Image (tube, rainbow, N blue to C red; front, side, top):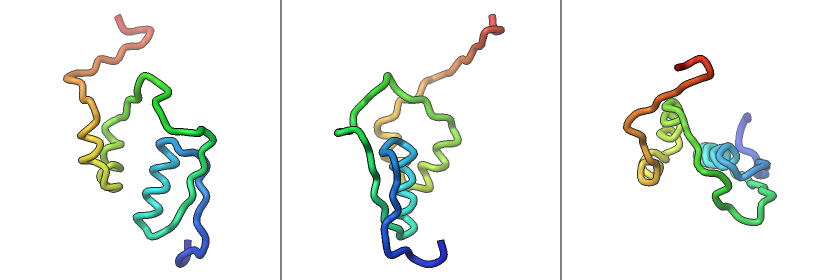
Length: 85
C-alpha cells in the first residue's frame, strides 16, 4: 500500500481474524468496513484455545490488558493423541 487510500478496505467476516485485521489496519491509519452476515455477535461455541504465540500479536494490537481481564489460564495442559497411553 503505497500511500494512504482514499476509500476504506472491505473486510469479509467479523470473527477474530476480520476484527484483528480491522484493528491492525486502523493502527496504521487505514479505514475499513467489516461485513458480517450474522445479525449480532454472540457466543457460538464452548470456547477457543489460543497458543502462546498469539499473545505477541495481542501485544502489538494493544489488547494484552483487555485479554488478560477476560481470559482463563489453566494451571497445566496435557495433550494426548491416539497413541498416548
